[in-house]
Structures are given as C-alpha cells and as structure tokens.
Amino acid sequence: MKNQFGNGSGKVVECRCSICGGLVEPWPGGHGFGNNPQPVRPDINDRCCNRCNAEIVIPARLGLPPGSLGSLEEQRSQMEKAMELFQENKSKLTDNSV
Ligand SMILES: [Zn+2]
Image 1 (cartoon, helix red, strand yellow):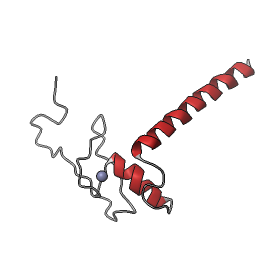
Image 2 (cartoon, rainbow, N blue to C red):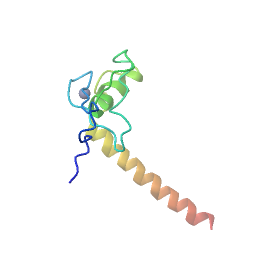
Image 3 (cartoon, protein in one colour):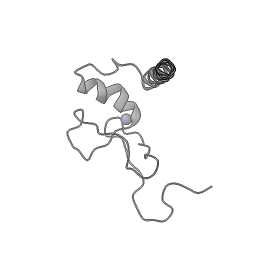
Image 4 (cartoon, protein in one colour):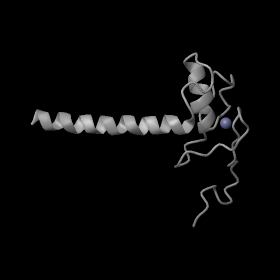
C-alpha cells in the first residue's frame, strides 16, 4: 500500500481546519485541501473541514445560524436521497420520450 501523503516529496501535506482546528482531508488527486471557509473566516488562504463547511460555513452564507441545515451526516443522506429521486425521474423521462 502506497502512502498518498507524498512520500518524501518535501511538500507540506497537513492542513488544519481554521474553524475547529481539526485535520482537513486532502481532495483525491491532489486538488488541494478542504473548503473555503468564507465568510466565517475572512482569509482566502484559510481552509475548513467538510464538517465545518456543512454545519457552519454554508448556513452562514445563507444567513442562517450554525447547524440549521443539519449535521454533515444528515446533509449527506439528504443529498443521496435527492440523487436517487433525480435518477428515478431521469429514467422515467427517458422511458416516456421513446
Ligand atoms: Zn472544522
């Protein structure tokens, strides 16, 4: 098993969430770390973890109090349900159009 955290490349491979201080996971394929925490943190170089993004940053952008969109897990399951519905509707639409 190869370690994905850049074996000996000398690059900084650790990123901390600017909101909770937790470790921010890198995106697959080396596309940087985490999420943009604005407007909760004003510095564009700051990063935040997926949980803070879902529970604090996105509500803040909508002018809502933290946690008002539910936890990260709740948002994920809602997203999955929405995707299932979308796939269902899509296949129905394709059936009807034939
Ligand atoms: Zn965080």
